[in-house]
Length: 449
Ligand code: NI
Image 1 (cartoon, rainbow, N blue to C red):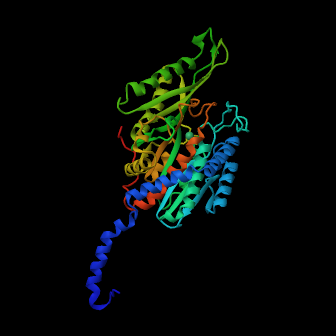
Image 2: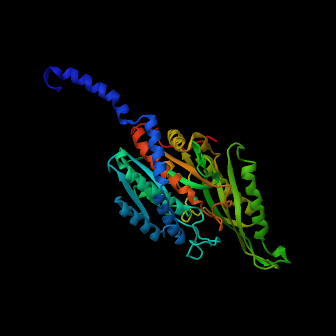
Image 3: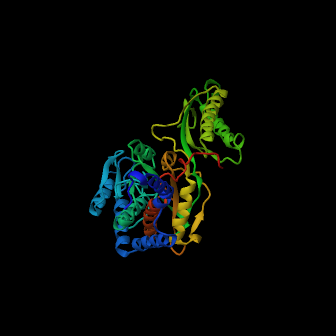
């Protein structure tokens, strides 16, 4: 036995020094790369077992039948809690109104998080099938029902293999992704406290089944909305000189807004300004008092985003004034908080490539171009190192899938085992392979594009 008393002090200091040098290695995986790959394949085999597949399909269909909008996911949340209780997984509830946060593993650091969004869309389902939405005017048309099922599937795999967990996996079931605000509220409620990294996925109708796609750096755009009321003076359509026509003013505003991207933006810095709403007038022979326009704007850096926001306001007000109209501009922050840019951490990208390649084969792990779509997962990427990827469900030998937010959107349920296994593997291997301080600071929003 080594003694650190008396004359052995110097030797012990030396031993301690060597130990400290070895510490990062000791904290890393005790498994070699072959064993890590085997663990990953085992997780997929577990996820593909008929019993678990049927269980996930049942969860997904039950949520699909009872879609709930943002911050109203009470039944969905209840179902999640029941399933976690059945598995013996402790959780916190309520978090951000309807959110649930489960904990699998040692209950001690390090902590790594997995996130699923729970909310549906306010639209009528057009697909006739046994498990069609039972709630008129509400539908899971973005696959969030499947996201919940896959994270619960991952919880099952993690709980069954908890001896592999060198830390704790935090399961984040998040409300209100579609209307925005859910991720931000969860973060404000403290769900990321002590969490080192977080992973999220989205089903994709354009990526084949068994394939995943992502990229390091910015993957989804920052997103904002605007609404403007352009006011003139109503009057008889045949006597325009007695009126101040807001229709013509608003038309010029719409045209001028097109120049923000085409004439003011760097062509290599992707941006979008779309006017999607134009409301004014109700008769063929009456000039209305006012016109309301509204739309969205997107950009891939904080700077581009705030510049666009400022210019949208300036152009609307100034262009309306050219036609003697006044204008007010509202960025609707209360209803639709701005989504930041979703930025994937580069080290986590390497981790994703390694895990996904071990599970699916490297030819099934694809690069994807950034998209002008947005996600409130972006708030997580602003807060801590985070990673978001797309999970394929396209199967060309079957019916072609409609894109998300279509009333005819459907899910290829064959995707569920892949999502569950990837979630479970990304988290387990993160805890095995990453030392607490080995990640660079949070993925910063940058001008990479
Ligand atoms: Ni979605």
